[in-house]
Length: 407
Image (cartoon, rainbow, N blue to C red; front, side, top):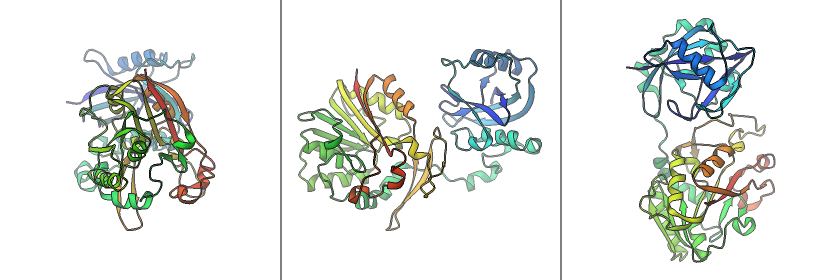
């Protein structure tokens, strides 16, 4: 039987208050302020208690707006949420930073489409803000997030992208187009950004290094040539197959590879590595906190974790020459298709994260951030610029790089 929730509709003109949930239900998603109603209390009483605890707001004349039926994608638990329009108190709002939410924002209806919000809440919320007269013409319990009857949804809805299958499908085309045997032995953080110039890492000679999401093995081979004993792990069997051949072609005797997910490093002993590194791989990892926790476990005290991800500002922009704002800075995930000249395609799910999210993930899991880099890439030319939108790189950073040390 679904649990009952009460949701608060706080409004300022054409804007509504939405919050980012710190804990279940709907953890790490955007919702209205919502509370599960206890068995011994009324829906309105639960909402008043929640609003007082989380925002310092008191009211007594809330009005019912709509009932929506929502499924938490994490555990598939069902909820019935009654939405109440709640007037603002004269004293304003005081956000409880230690409460159920780690962010709160006033947004217009158009901005809701870019949020990682339960779809069965987003659609009626947009209607509340833009077309309230149509609300009661719709039976939300029988609709999918796109307004399609549930009976038809299974046939029409695409399954979520399978990142492992996608990387297996595009591995050969990706390696041929982006790498081949160029820059062998040079550790490359991003387009035109190499370790020899950035000097991010400590001396790796004689150190044990783990590469998270090693892809075709280029970073593992580079670390091996720099004097490290390097191990790469990747979820794609095709990428690992390529990596082993690549290492063999280039006599990287201190490079080895295993197939697996970076969320589970149980094959490696505690404190068995001096260095962990990941370059443009963690954006494709959903359970990122588990990855950071596991990485901390396998690193020795004072071991270094260095990661490069696509800069979250870059993910907000369209790729056409206007570089218009295409999605919210806080949106996740993003599903997209990577196509190559030979016709190879793969559907991928990407998890862009904000700078503060990355910093908090590291700090909360035993790391001290020593360096943050956002290198300028607008002057990159030649082979280094392959795949880089140089005009966009002149305007905003393309890559975000952290160096953190295990405390």
